[in-house]
Length: 133
Image (cartoon, rainbow, N blue to C red):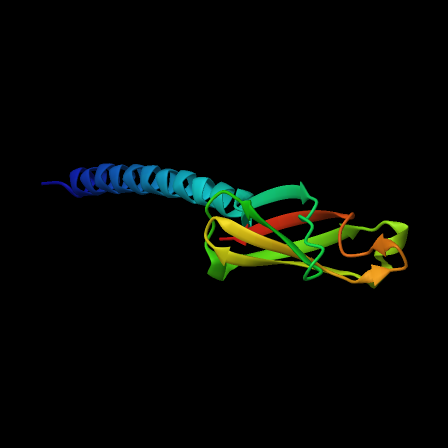
C-alpha cells in the first residue's frame, strides 16, 4: 500500500470524525440554549393570589376576623402581604393575616370603640399571597 493511500484513508477518517464531532457540538449547543431559556424564564415566584376583604364584625370581643379560602399553597414557601385601607375612625386598629393551612387564611382586625365609632371594623384589607418555588 502506498503512502498516498494511507494518508488519503486517514484524511477521510479524520474528516468523518470532525463531521461527527461538529454534529455532536451542534446538538449540545441546542440543548444548552433550551436549558438557558428555561433558566432565564423561570421565576422565583410560583403563584400570586390577590384578595380584598372586609373582616366580619363582632361587637362583643372587638376582634374581627374572616377566614378566606385560597388556592392550595405550600405554607412553608409562602408569605402573606397585608395592606389596610383605613377609615378615619380606624386609627386604633391593627390588621393581619395568617396561614391556617394550605387553603385557608385567617384575616383579623383588632380595635376598640372610639367615641360612638367602632374602630375595629369598617376598613378593607388587601392581601397578596406569594408562593415561592
